[in-house]
Length: 434
Image 1 (cartoon, helix red, strand yellow):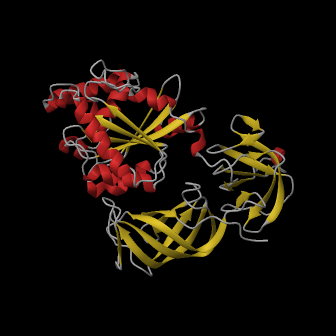
Image 2: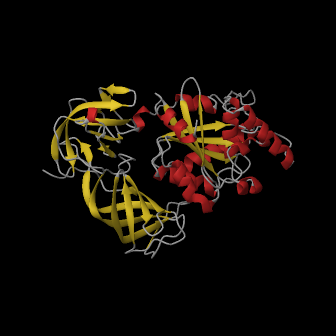
């Protein structure tokens, strides 16, 4: 099964947790993922044999499980993570998609990419080093991305003799700076990813630690409320009109539910026209369903023949997103060519694409301290800042903190088709219209 097919199969499962690993260089992110895959028996025998062979040729005294995720030649040569590596595994209780993200400051954009869809982030901390700049940087970015659950994995505890005082000091330091972050769920776990202590199985080396090992926490963390189940948002991705004569009157609207619970019989409106309609039925790959909720991909059929196209959105008549062209956003810049006011890009938001111009650059944020520097003239590679922009056509959006799907967008260089920025919308959602 290809990676894309495997991903689709896992998305169809009842309970899926997406999580990312982040932290400073050499904190053991790739090793931790390798340990999870190994101890949950999610590695094929030939994969393990290959890793063992590469480890021997590198002169490692042990099987280097980090090689399971560090697949690029440059990553293996330098012993660092550069690109985002995705891995998939499952236990009887839950399915998982892991994003192994880089620790180097120059790969901040890669970290943002990998963490942008995560339900949970694991921030690794080297017990010998304690809280460092990248710990604060990645924690702040996770907070900006509205990742609701943070796990601080105090790794390499074996190298400090499993000293509880070291663990408690790091926990205190993290709580001190995390108090300024907008994250509600914090968890701390002492571990050794290299030896597997408190990763899948509880370690007898930490009798002073009463919490669960990492895998048990990942299996039990509650994520059902992470999605917005109040505001119905259904961006139309595709109008389904089969060409076969037997389906000559078939018309459905395919897409992924971005918010709320959509049910058969619901009264909705179509944006931007505002035309009312009624949901006649909802279909999935496995057959019809009575209701759909995030992140289900479905085909919605309407009772009336209204004009609906790709980029339109179904919502409730009295609970609409903002419809606007003047936007306020935080943006992470992802290219060497700097962002400057008056620059023009293609803006992709849910299933809608339009052109946009940067109307103002308000400030650059120091992601280590949260300090704002106003009066800057540009944002460079990996910078994060607040911007104002105007789109050529209206988009239908919510504030990012309310809905991560309808509150996010990307900017694309139309000349190269490269993604140059990832944005999080800030304006408070409000109902506009009659």
